[in-house]
View 1 (cartoon, chains in turn purple, orange):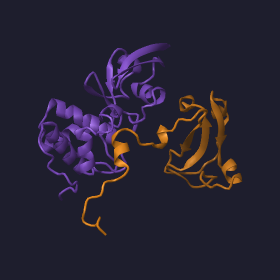
View 2 (cartoon, rainbow over the protein chains, first blue to last red):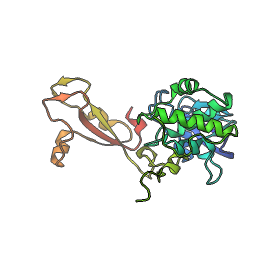
View 3 (cartoon, each protein chain N blue to C red):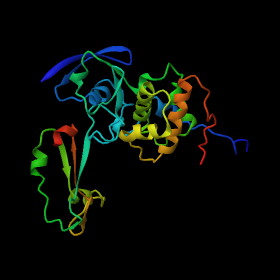
View 4 (cartoon, rainbow over the protein chains, first blue to last red):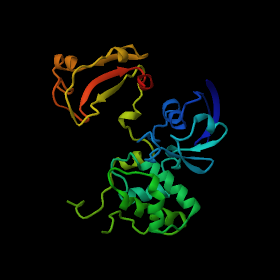
Length: 168
Length: 102
């Protein structure tokens, strides 16, 4: 069964013909060429494929493309403004919160979802929220620091850890 | 050495943070083939035989390679008989679409 879907991706209207079984992540990666959204596990555990649909964080491997028909999708490619990183992306860079970078898009998208609902999360709340995002470089500590800093900057506060070397 | 003791920004972070990294799974060329390695499901077993006929007949499959092919090619990356340990590669197939292998 083929179906034409129309949705908004990173602010731009797009249409594509998909199979009924096509996952949103397949539409994004294989048909729209947005390969920043990663497939790390195929089992909805790793969180590398997190995108926002109508402002809500979802794992794009758990949603069919047809379910996104008529909705608005934000991927990691749409987070920065031109060449200027979003404060959350900047905080990841400042805190060396990425190594190989594979989990990073999902981490950033989850972090933005957390901060939208909880602008001033505690370290514990950040760690709990990251339950659905796996990092195999084992970089969680700096990821938590980055999300705290990104949240602070998004609240209008100065970054606490400008120079990026995480405290032990 | 002015950089010693000062933070140095990684060159790759910007592209990783904006979805611009290129991992092998991101590569999508026209006519690209996908390889799948069949691995031993047993911790320690003797490989008696491999029947590749069903794999070869599957739609989209271009080639199925076993130890005989790999040995002829000078590769020893798949097992030939004894000592098929868990996770060792037994056969490798290449197909136009990964989906068609399942």
